[in-house]
Length: 231
Image (tube, rainbow, N blue to C red; front, side, top):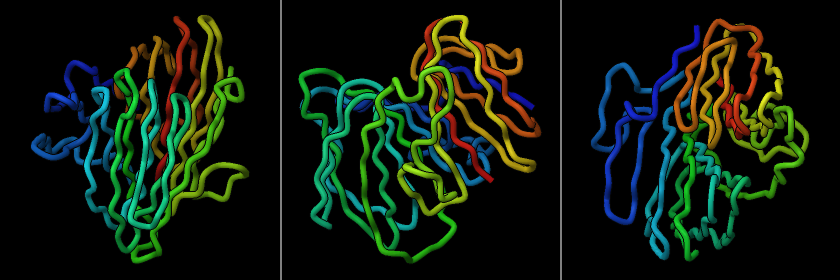
């Protein structure tokens, strides 16, 4: 089953400095049919105006991944962590028992991010934060795991039965991703147009997948595809 959720049909809100679109129920947007996708709870498509951002606010017991599409995001938290994450890279925050952080766009351009929340497998753990550059060349033509709770190599660790992977495909290029039995995937392209198992999707559309063993991707334009694999 592959269901395309067009970007134009997503919920959202415009706050002046923040233009947010929500793939799942979030804040004032509620849709009883779109509460989560397996352990995936939130996928927000945020555009943050220059020199603005989210002031300090708390989180608890959630794995929060920020994938930067354009620009950069600067993080600071009450654990003393500070960092700047640029386009194509990811940061991971395991909220655990509680963490307060801010996220600002200190750049002179609009920053565009995907913010992804995944429900953890363990609650009440120590909070943590990390970021890592993943040059796009490393995932050219195939999916590379960027964050994972499945003990995978150099991926940023998360406390969830989940994996975040991304691929950049040139127009006409194809690749595959295998889903283990019983698992689901949710896909959003940061840019481009592509088909997955013959189903067409465009940049920023959501694509919900279940009961598919192999996902076969073909790009009709240069594309950057982000995938979350969850139980």
